[in-house]
Image 1 (cartoon, rainbow, N blue to C red):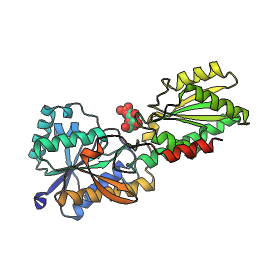
Image 2: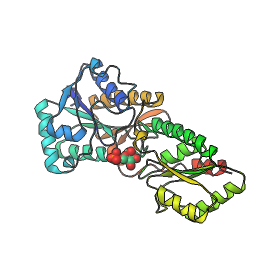
Image 3: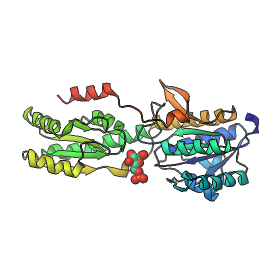
Image 4: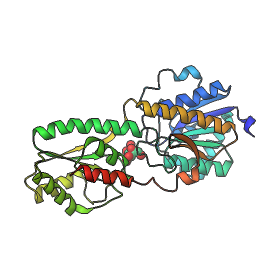
Length: 328
Ligand code: F6P
């Protein structure tokens, strides 16, 4: 079975993340190294359905390891969620003579790959690429490290102006289901409060904490709010709420948005992506399928895609405790 794989496709899918290019490069070069053909698919599953393919050799991925975004583009594809869409995609892959694919993406992308394999027995391997770090079975996803460094950098800058004006800032960061970016960047940047979806401590506690902060002599404050936080108020409403209940505070809001997804990947993300790409191709050639390449305790692991998509990773309770202590 394994020796039948001659041509492997690679594509990026869902929200892009820094380091995806390094992963593409690794898949392409591993194929070249092992004497296999490699094909890039543009715009994820959408490009697969439309047959938007391009042969890739080792030189086609020169000078991309340091670049953010994805040279293959990405898309969230509704059509691939349908059996009809997947049928079209299968026909395109057959026409191009592709024997297996590596998908770089998150939960939704892995679900698509799994459905596709179940219907057509097509060999698939996933590489976790998302800034959210929310994929079960891997301690890190490609892009997370870069994103938290981007966020820390932004918060450091906001702190400069916050402390010059004795202001309180609410800073919204990405993470619609999980608070990993908020918690890690929050601790790294010394935030006074961190509001995450996993832990709704209520608005009362926020006011109490801000009052304590003021009373203890802090002149400025930074509150990090994950996109998916469960207080029921967005950052602008939180600003109004605090201004109403604690008029001593001069409050401003900053939504970091999509800048968190861009930028040159950190060395950590480049190395992780390079390792995962090699493992993905080798695994396919060993006849493996329906697996995600993950990393645990610095070692690469193979996780059934079925497990990876079951739930989101849990928040680090120890880090929450550290954060609580640091805000004393
Ligand atoms: O999944 C990654 C992510 O960056 C989330 O944190 C965020 O909620 C979402 O993508 C934004 O997606 P879009 O770019 O489609 O608006």
